[in-house]
Image (tube, rainbow, N blue to C red; front, side, top):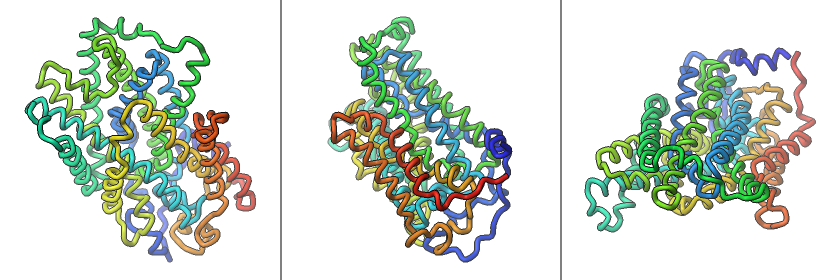
Length: 483
């Protein structure tokens, strides 16, 4: 009971800093080392603003507008997004605990369950998904720059390759921020969220005024006539909503390792994530619904919609704010974790900065322009597909930390070969087997139409199958309950 109260209230103190000895250079560098308590400066506001800045972004807007384009009415779309974020908040907070308690990042934390070398498997899987997100955000930023350029110089569209120049320019700005480091990210997150909120409200006010107010917008009906029709769209959509933040649900220790206390990170996340996502989702839903009233079709891309502003100055200001917010989200959500993950592959050679550069190059190779072809490829292809990979990892991590380890980790052994997390050659075969089966069962839904629901519920299927199987296989390693 004491441990339960400590976790819920966030009053459990972090263990005293440990002087690591006999660390293996292949498992350790300054970026992966535990953060000492005295160097942790992130409070409740920092975590709330982090989530506001990450949530108030174009992919969130597209998430909501995609549901409207798919046929939902505004209450169904907002409700689906709210439910998905409340669900993903649970594994988010559960995985965040270890980061704050031990000061360790995700690729180090996952060594406890997968082994000191086997941790590279989930770390790289998560990193590759983040690279895809990095590319998507960079492409959106490039589109915004291209739209601004066409406003001030309409002839820019006549020059081939201009779109690509804008994309690589914005990509280069992201690389510069990465080079500046984690404190620059913290600064940007604190000031960037208000800009995107202002843009969203400005866009909402402009388009609803043209549509004759919110009345015509919010009275648009769902295209689904039966419960069965709705459920066939709702179920994979909900999985997509969970999949939207399933990456950060894994690597949240990368951020909470800087927290002053458990209470600070828990309160900040609980206030920031559901509130910001739901608010900005409503803006996306309302604006997309209004675009149907005005233009006769749902325009789900806000950059395209901003290009229809009649006032060039207003459009440029809005697009600049959009760029700042996109930069914030991209660096915080899609660079911090893969940088650490790639560094974990060879800590002695790959630093946080080098890992960030690798992320940037991989993001281009993921061809984000194809992932944003339409709302269907974005939600049902990209988001649900990501959840099939990441749900099983989340299940294994949570079942391991809470049911197998009882929240007791040997921080020093996480950085040493031959210790308790060595397993066999550095790999925990039980975790790898559970991961493979969880992913395989979810993907089976794509290959066998009769069990399509396995893919539609990909995150949930993978989470419980991999987590439950891992727990059963790890019975010989269970630690006793503390008094």
